[in-house]
Image (cartoon, rainbow, N blue to C red; front, side, top):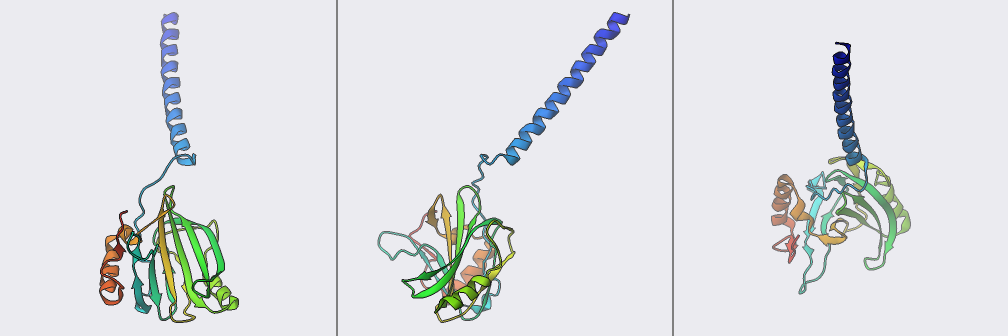
Length: 212
């Protein structure tokens, strides 16, 4: 009788150990999947409209990327007053800078963001600052910092209006190549954009000659 009890106890103990090991393995796999940087996330982002106070917008310039037309690797949101710029999706700030734009003959500031393994977002704050002092004012108006994780709708900063021509250049990259941001807008963002496009858009299509 004692031997049978020992055998039963041994079997029961083995089952408990097996169950515990299985649960432990499941938890370990889950931990590794959530903490291992090699786990790839390449889901296309869903972008909300990046300008909160749309009443200051006066122009929308198309993304153009084809063999026969002028290359323009983002969408420009032109303003006539200070614009509030918000995060179009969840992302992480990976750069913040100020530099002199020789082509445009003005100082401009910029932010770049990692969305996931495949997608990056770049927002150039082109206030058309005529000198470095004004450029630094624009840089200071961008309130996020490198390494900061931002969520959709969070304030990124303000685009100042220093001169006519002031705009944000809104550029999305997929695997280091520019793609048209409009194609990634949410249905609500597209509705806002489409309505404005009929009034202040610069061509018949915000994504000329593009395939995402």
